[in-house]
Image 1 (cartoon, rainbow, N blue to C red):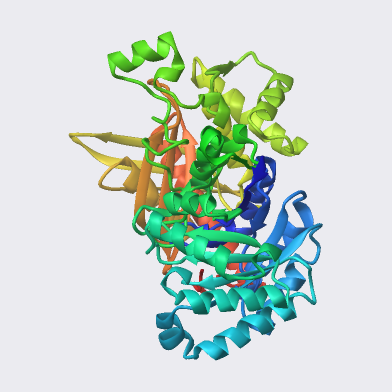
Image 2 (image 1 turned 135 degrees about the vertical axis):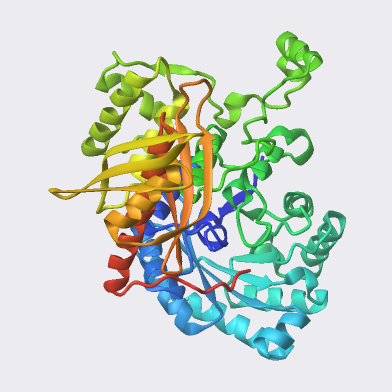
Length: 519
């Protein structure tokens, strides 16, 4: 079957959306999982936007093998030079350059006429070819562009050396039937279109990103740009898992294939959710908790007789956990390592394995059953831990009740130093957070607090995600425990440590990207 290339932009378009920022270590972990997933291209970031973005692109280029490593660049020579340097270590690299082609963007944003835009696009592609043979060009806001002008730009950038031409629905404006017609028009109108792969990049403002992408595939597009869980600017991008499983499940219709290892989909989804602190809704297609759940009696009866009655794909196909009970307090390090490898954690260091094992044993003493998701949370937290932890929780004690004043005593370790304080609050969590502020000397403002049960049962592990503002900077913190108060405190300490680590990086010359230009 003919192949559709999967271009993943989770680390660029997805990460630049408000509330989805990732640090360098987190981006690298996601990139390695994307390689295991089997994506063809990883758009690793916008290298020219900040020193931090440059370093993350460069680290991914150095350490991630398999997929093409791409970086986005404006149609500006300086951007392209920086991007080329960042992806230079990659085995396979791509420069992805773009400029807007719609009248509204040219007039109000670029302050350029169509002739100038055409010249800039051609010049950028030609310049990028000095650094790599793999150059992609995107016509930003293509779906609101004049079609004949768009075709002219595409023709000329292919002449200049573009090997992939991307037709973005930047603002999610297109309707599937209309988008299919536009792609067909381009396929028939541009004389040298067979010299490049036609790509699409659809946003979800009207909830049509996946539908538009599939319509474009039907018209001849052979690359889809998408993100894990559909994250991205505004309402997000086309969801990778939905695109891939639509092609996989309806091969009878599309007669196409992808290189995606579908069994890695659920694992990748949960990893991105855990890192960003933004969870998919239960009824989300493919990766939602209810995607393969059946409550209605008629449905349950049908599935028990034959799963195909109500399931058009099997949970195992996308890597949904089928095994529930995995380990207990008598299990050893070898058994844990084997389970971790089954869950996709194949490159844990000995030190990381030791830390995971220590936490697993403590959890096993508290729970009768340790489930896959429990192990998953512990492993992800260890992998995603920042290099330097300034503070660690040593002790927490709270009192609360409908006739008691909520109080909390918290004791932290900072190196060999022990720090302790107590506070009162509106509840035990509030009291503990006030005690933490007093100990650290850093005043944080809690802007978001989420608690979810990782597994089922009264002894379920609770995972807390907080967003805390320190001096105007919002940081996401995460913590887990069978005790929700302890999980809450761990999440806040995680946010404090991240803030201090961020300040340390900034003192060394790194800065946080505020650049929001996106296709």
